[in-house]
Length: 306
Image 1 (cartoon, rainbow, N blue to C red):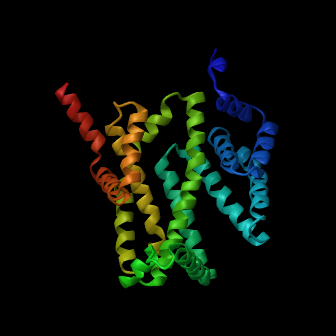
Image 2: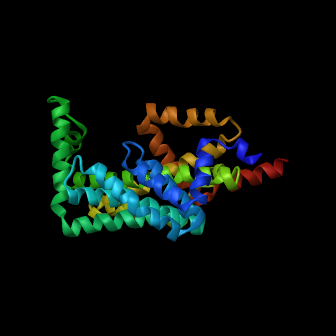
Image 3: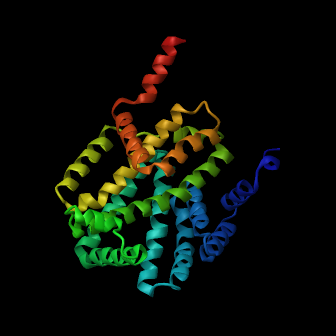
């Protein structure tokens, strides 16, 4: 009866877990299809979550080859290899960590470490790459703005160094890579929960929060970035992204009695319409919750009232 109720994704996921050759073929095919690479990564993450690092590691090579072949259409082979590694390896590592620890904080810590190590490597080996990326973006934005002042011109007019902006851009790229690793992992965790732990994934999302250590890292990164320490500037978008997710989790937890679609609308619509207000608000909520554990406080108040 359970298999009858399973949908398409659940049936395919179960087959991927049961048949190694099918998993290998699925990852290889999805990796070379445009816009399907994230599904290949989700399958790798699912196998890592359920069967461990070795079984998932077998799938990494075809995923790397597929991503490299797609990238070769636009970049030389060295860039294609670099792009494939950046797209595949972080998700694989995150899947292993989540499978071993069942902790999203541990996943965040590993991704933060990987991205910061990559940023430091680029600073040491190819610092000109950081500046060239910024110059390319500046040229592109000026051409699109048709002579109007763009965002980068605005910050430069307020005496923010172009080199600082260049390193902040590298940090934004690092945060986007972390997000790209998280999306297939979240999807894989959702499928795993539907197959083996119904309701567990939702509880994980609603209970995600920072802790005092992550708050201390946040304060240290902000202080160092204010002092124009380049590595801290690289890490600032990453820690902001972490606390935005923590704030969203707290807000979703507080609204959990509403239907899921209603919660999604209440959280995302204001964020899209007023990002300069809502994103800092979520950061503050996440930071506050990491210090005081709002959920625990509210649950104790509810028990006293009951």
